[in-house]
Amino acid sequence: MATAKEDLEQFLAAQPADTSKEELIRELAFELMVQRGIADSDDGKTISNDEMQHRIKFWQQ
Image 1: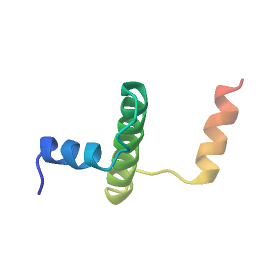
Image 2: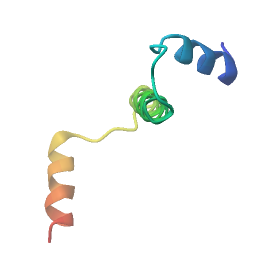
Image 3: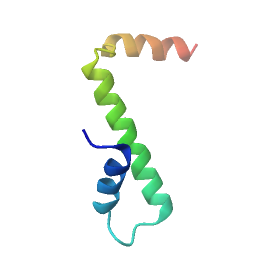
């Protein structure tokens, strides 16, 4: 398994050379959210679409 530093180096190497710091941070944040989502899914930490719709309706009240 790669270290966090190795993962970050690989991520940075895949970005265009003219990418701004803000774009790098935004892309890194997105990448981390995707990785967390995949890990949650692999761990069975998900809810159904019906449950999500119910929660959204509850929040809107």
